[in-house]
Structures are given as C-alpha cells and as structure tokens.
Length: 140
Image (cartoon, rainbow, N blue to C red; front, side):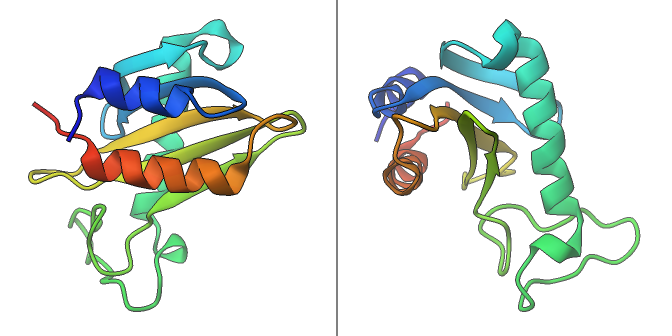
C-alpha cells in the first residue's frame, strides 16, 4: 500500500511521463501532483480533467449495458459499481492523457491523471501501471 506522493512518483517513473495528479472529480481539486501540468497550469488541468471525469460518470453512454442507470435526481454509480467507467484515454497529436478512477472505501470520487508523451511513452504499460497504482493507493 502506498500514499499519494509515493503513488504519483511511481507513475512518474514511467518512460514518457510528463505529469501526474490525484484529482477529486466532484470539485476539481488536485489532492497531489508531480511533474509538470499540461499547459503549465495545475489548477486548470485538475478542473478540466475533473469535468471530463464527471461527465463520463454521469452519462449512461459511457457505462457498460449491465451498469445501473440512475433515475432523475440520483447520483451516478461511482467507480467499482457494476458497469462503471474504469479509465479514460484522451489522445492528442503529442500526448496521451490517462484518467484512472480509484476505488476507495468511501465515496470513490478521485482519479489518477497521467500526462504521457506520445513518442516516448507506452500507452499499454501506462494503463497497467495506473491500474496497479490505483489499487495500492491509500487515502488518509
């Protein structure tokens, strides 16, 4: 098991890693970060990534068919729920942005955001590393 800083430094050891953060998707707050943020603005990067994460959780299009669909006024299923989104990948011409939802014992409202250089990074290895890091992460 590892803490936030250890988790972030672990994923930053990946070839091509440019930046990483643990973000609360309900409010857009970065709980920790390492490396450089996209466009040099850590607060903006956290808020924008959180918006994408929140949208993926809210809309049924991004959940598998066996996932529960909330009725009006109900919160969408969080990470760990049947059919919930596990991760998101956004591809640009020069980079990958990986968002991996962290299953916690309480509200599961956080995700790991890894900014990976497209030329030197390995997307498959990064996904596996983020999955493992998210499993080991202990939120205090």
